[in-house]
Length: 114
Length: 114
Image 1: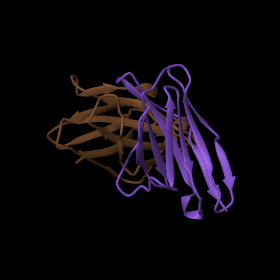
Image 2: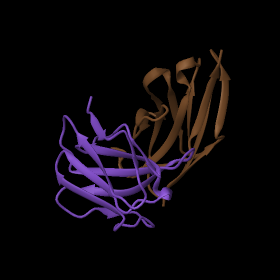
Image 3: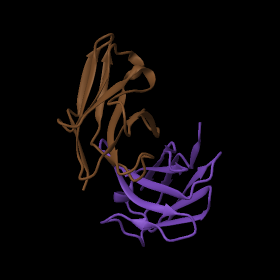
């Protein structure tokens, strides 16, 4: 089956620094990828839709200047959390769309800001 | 607008017992419905999905779900629970069959005791 890889799986950073999370489709090309955020013991919330070669579309309430998304190639989308603060600590998960048939999820990234 | 309600944040069953996880949806367009499973600190795995056609959908690991339009429900069942079924389960709705830009329910934690 299609594989989506996220890196890193866990990251701890200091408050005020920036963190980049990568989402790669390993065996297929994905023109569209999605970023979700999951707070402890809560559901996943769609943050943004990442489109290859164009600007991401952010959901209401998501700060685009804080969560920078770059989808520079058909197999890679990155999410950069800028000037991270403890409240940004969360589980971030990406998914990649395979040809309009199914979306495959990465394994997630646990971000802890201290 | 679409939304998903999962009744019961925590369900406990004995090994071998019936598993029933409830999901109701709201959608202004014909819905595409999904069930995902998440193990601790991991991404999401698709269990099954309803797009069109047969309303009883069979998925992996012995799970199945029935789409009932009149009840706006998509409950997940498994005849006999196994210890390995203990996980978090999410019901989700999308406007497309690929399951992109998903709207998730809050999730149900399934515990299985021996």
